[in-house]
Length: 288
Image (tube, rainbow, N blue to C red):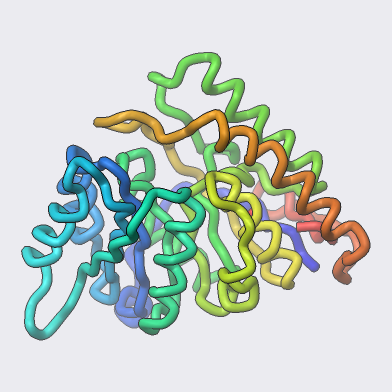
């Protein structure tokens, strides 16, 4: 089993036409994101990817985000092409479950690639073509938009407490799971359809942000390699964070649960490594 390849790619050339037309679905969960959604939809719909579809997954937002999403879908959809769809869920039961529902729907609809993207403006939409090109050129099963490889960064508005908490969460999960992935908690990821099918989204146990860690862990254990590319992670433009104490507790417990559950089920591959484009590539037996 191979761990993620840590690859820095500072620039991105335009994609070949046949690559840009591949069916790719961006899954964007929302809860009270009415102030951010129109801008994010415009950014995603403006990408030079004719095969792109945006699936908004709304958890019955009290601020009317779901209704706004339908209005935006009507703006971009036509009789000949349905570019935006909205999945309405009846309750707010966790970011991870919202992602799993949206990703499962995308696979059922024929997506060859699925991108996870937050609706708050923190993930740079313009990097999506680069993520797709990286997956296709390297054969990777998933691509991570990473804050913690060379060239990655955090918004200057992040305070010291948040920076330290984010780095600690990454180092903690990496240590428990014994992985070289620099940004295992990252939420901006591209997945091949076959990677998600091999993982089995229906088997995911994480409801909250720890979904990001669990999905990467299971993907590598299923034999899929990954690549990290640098991004700048922005502060949300409007609204407030959905991170709760319960979510933080789950995020601390999930790596331990994964390690214990898999301690007697190590995949093949052993441990070896080599330098790759200035970063370390590790072939390891426990792991995104």
